[in-house]
Length: 209
Image (cartoon, rainbow, N blue to C red):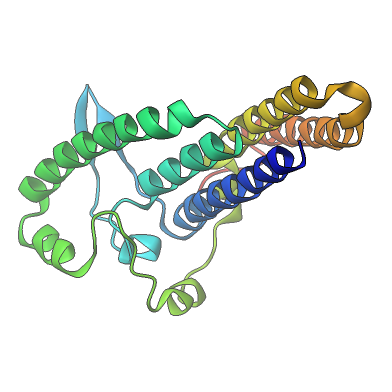
């Protein structure tokens, strides 16, 4: 039991660390130079070619952040099937999306996009000079909250309940109550933070800039 418990603890630590890294990457990306790109009339659309902030180090940091978050949750939640099959499917889906977006950007921005591709990797970040990037730009906290408050709520809440479920089923309430109660409190705090952010956004106390 001790060995299994130790393995589970390491899975939680490693998985949570990976997920936090993914969330941090998303937060830096949105806070520094958010990309206004997405679907318009079921077609790829972009107003400008954003090359500042984290986009100066990775062309698709938000997708990479999503992948890291889901990979981390899969590991911490002890979901071997998701890690082995879900993550590859997710990678395939994102590669297809990236391919479609790059075709569009290449046609719209031409040589500017080609030069950008030569400087910056598609997925694997090059963080050389990241300190100068962060120092040279204003971090938009309002935009981060407005655009991102739902993402950490979803994955932290989901992971918390997965850990609570596994802990309770494996060890029972008496043996795991000192784990269940802190996680329950964490879940309530995250939920309160979500609704506060939602209220501030809905009533326009916070605006994305």
